[in-house]
Length: 164
Image 1 (cartoon, rainbow, N blue to C red):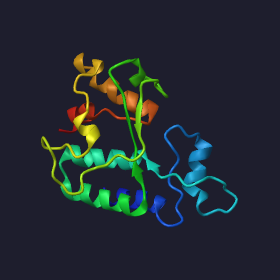
Image 2 (tube, helix red, strand yellow):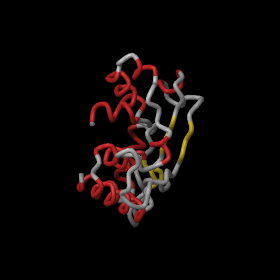
Image 3 (tube, rainbow, N blue to C red):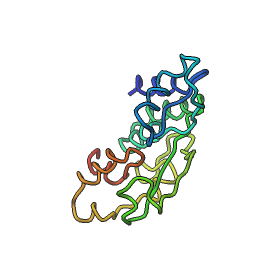
Image 4 (tube, one colour):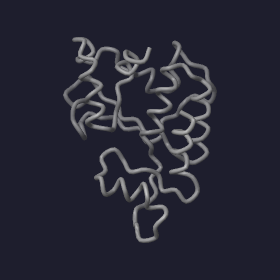
């Protein structure tokens, strides 16, 4: 996990331009991944980082405070802002660019490892739905698959179902 945190922080550090957004094309992903090294690639710096959100959320869910603290400090230092997309329990949660999405471009996590209820370290953790439709009917794998397809959100209680 430390290597992943370092790799991500390096993408945003100094001359790094960040990583492409979740809705990027393969060409845009390559431009962001390699673009900081080449003058002819004309993409602007991105500060939002869904990857930072995933790392921080998984560290919180797993209860690994040292990894959480390391990741949070690294991401703050390089300006990789954890971005969060939240949904109500409607059809919007299943599609890209859902109409009822609430986007936070820089989610604030607690400064020190002091989890509430054993894992909650950020406002979106407290707001996390524990009763999405697919969760209620026991379709946890389907809920997880949606995250893999849309690439811009994860459902905290579904993650907790598999990790805790």
